[in-house]
Amino acid sequence: MPRIGVISDTHGLLRPEAITALQGCDAILHAGDIGAAEILAQLATLAPTTAVRGNNDKDAWASDLPEREWIDIRGVLIHLLHDIADLDVDPVASGVHVIVTGHSHRPHIEQRAGILHLNPGSAGPRRFKLPVTVAILEIEQGRASARIVELDIGK
Image 1: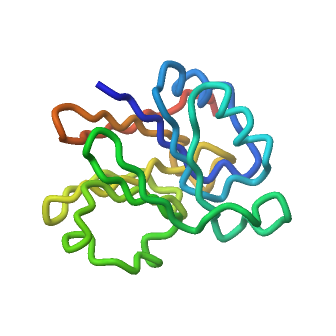
Image 2: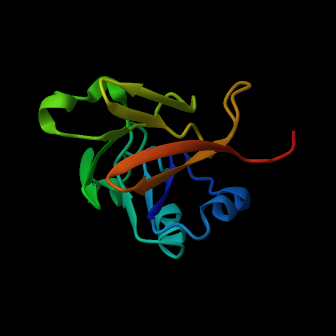
């Protein structure tokens, strides 16, 4: 069963707790607002990493990053983009099974019209009183399930 680490909104900070939570993943998806090329390089030492550009990824290092990606993992089609407001396809008509977004810093898992919507929250600097999180996406027998992992970063 493929285990995919999902991370977003690192804003230049890849915490050791996030690295620990993503250990053993078969792949990693970063939903944007990465903050620095070094973040992607570090994630790539853990597993093959696919990333999209977030609204704050404006420096030259990010210019080649796409705004959205389509990833097929064992027949499960994942659409990866930073902000759900920028979704410009009909998920049902496009055959997508999972939509992964970031941007809001709010971890969220929801099934809508048979499509799994996943926002891993933010693994970077804490924003307001929101938790610091990543997510794990698992694919088994053509179906995807997800869970949020809250990182224990102290106060």
